[in-house]
Length: 358
Image (tube, rainbow, N blue to C red; front, side, top):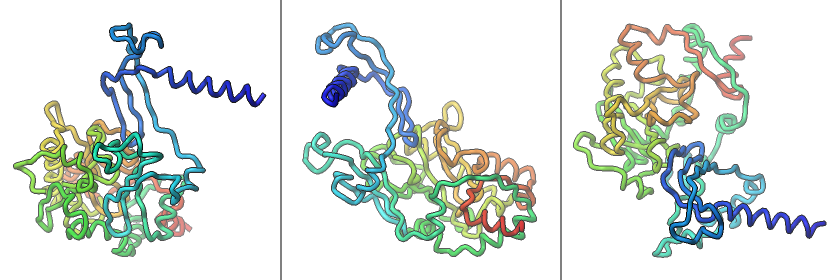
């Protein structure tokens, strides 16, 4: 019985492999770097015997590809030679280190010079070291609930909590602003201490493909892609703008006097997307800019308008920069608004709010 099962499994494997034999790629219809999916248009021969014959009949096909999840055995093997064939260090900022990893043998992926794999990395890793209990809770699976933060709750509870946070929690931000870390990944900067900002790209110094995509611009001095972007797929373009004004901690702190800053970020985002990455706005704005509330620090996320799967661009967390600008121009005081957002039950602020309700 075991022999029959093994034979059946072997036959199924052969059948699975031959079902894609002779596939020819026409073009990539769609791809999502964050969801690890792609839709490919191509063709397959109508018969296996004709797969090697030129001019044989072919059928147009679409392949929808999705990377599978890691196994528990793989998690246990991390740190041993069995997990990764090669690791590449992308850089480090404060407690964060970014790595690229290649799984399995490198034989098929060797570059002509024999200096490592020519194919793209299989895994992107963020190493956090050392970690605090806050980090552990942040990355743990947890239920989320909606918080209706009234101006009174903000003044009496949330603001006090924000002001109690140690500056060390956002050292990575100050390292970028002070150019202690990631200096060569800055794509654009306005150095004005009040209305200035940096747009930053985290992996550019270690990713030659990113450099090949970037073109000289007469408009921009320096910009940084966010660490969540693979820097290959333009439809998932992801940059981040960090303001120089360290007194600005969240959406609540924004007033009409900050309109020049916010408009400058919006204009620079579109200009940089076009000049550096070829994402033009011929038919309308092609980037989506938004702020998070609650944030760890006031910074503005810049995404390609087609990037719809980003987890941070959701209702209950993201506020469109255009909407913020419009509301400020209408005289809305964000300090007097009730803001509703989702918060995990293991988030430190959730526990603070729970205690305040008791």
